Amino acid sequence: MLKISEVAAEKAKAILKAEGKEGWGLRIFVHGSGCCGPSYGMDINEKAADGDQTVESNGLKVFCDTEAFASLSDKEMDFVTTAQGEGFVINSVGGAAPSCGSGCSGCGD
Image (cartoon, rainbow, N blue to C red; front, top):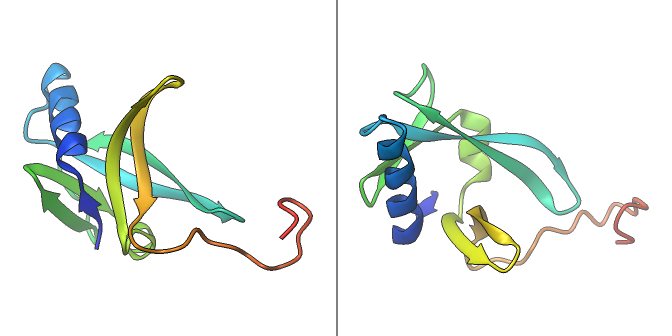
């Protein structure tokens, strides 16, 4: 199941408050998959849609459909600040990075 770091939850709640949407949550969705695994996107939603899974941690609700929920197993949502900028990230927890091993020319694997 998706874990939500305290830093990510606090940053998301601050964003929701600034938008006048306290009590709402974030929706995480999947944008396909490549050699490095799926790409994720986020949006703000008031409530879960029919068939959604909801994860609540550190006071933040995160909604996702069945496909996204399955790909978020053993992942953690965090918020990072680097020299290049800041933002939410989805990290693997305790696992190796994906490797397609298909021989495609994109990554040389």
